[in-house]
Length: 359
Image 1 (tube, rainbow, N blue to C red):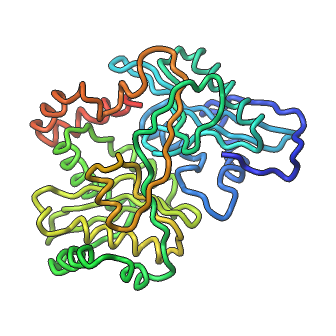
Image 2 (tube, one colour):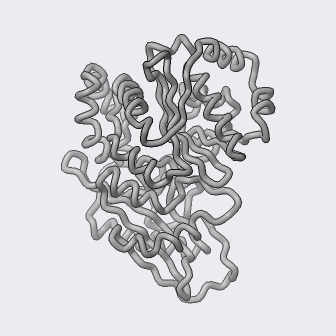
Image 3 (cartoon, one colour):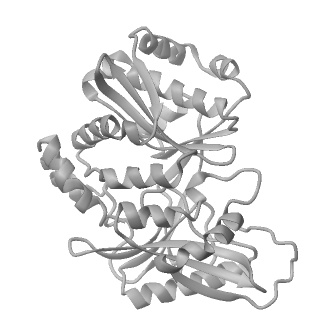
């Protein structure tokens, strides 16, 4: 992403690689640069490096370009390093979109040059930059564009949004509302019911679940802008979501509901509440996350009015193949079936150590 500067002719640029120990001193300047503009997703915030360091125990790096002491470029990276899967350099795990933010194409190139060098120094299998618009650079010889971001432009009021829904969608939402579900919003105090729903749903999907530490780190890092929603049927948590509120931009990186309650339309009830919450906060865009075009989650998001936008992840490959470690790789079909048969408590114990090593 090109971030305009006050001058089009940048003086000499110096590029720094900042490990986590040196991040705190630069965080205010990096935040001011990365989050500039009228619209900015929270997933672009440099404090995600602290989140991943605390929540996934990953080494993190901020590659910063400066000109005359002023930040003119930023690239956050996490070093994913496990015996099970190998070593990767990623911008950034868990998040759907992140990568180079720069004041000019020359600064973009300088940041990617340094990232490619760091990939060599750390001897990783690949460097993965989760861009939306691809950047031209000789080191980025590979791309993965099999998914798209699904985003909805929000109207000014909840009533206006309701009027945009089709009759089938409104009927499903009403069906969910008639069940008398209880909805709670909060932070750390809702982590346990949130995690209970999430871990059971992820087990049913055959996917290792992130640990509680990641979500605790997110809520601690962004106490005003990250919040949990939990839906209960009586005393039982049956659906949940994590919302991230940036500048006029709300994202839902994690949402789940229990399969046994599918017939109640609790998922429709939940998403209506998430969209209303974003409007209450004055947001103009709701980001449902990435989906495969034509797939079930794509169709689910499209019925709310979400439109696809490009998601082009770029790679500097040192060994292996693009997408080899993605959870949707067909080679993992047998493991997925086995995982679905495990007790939820066992997946809560095993899952975090596995998923932290998947880029």
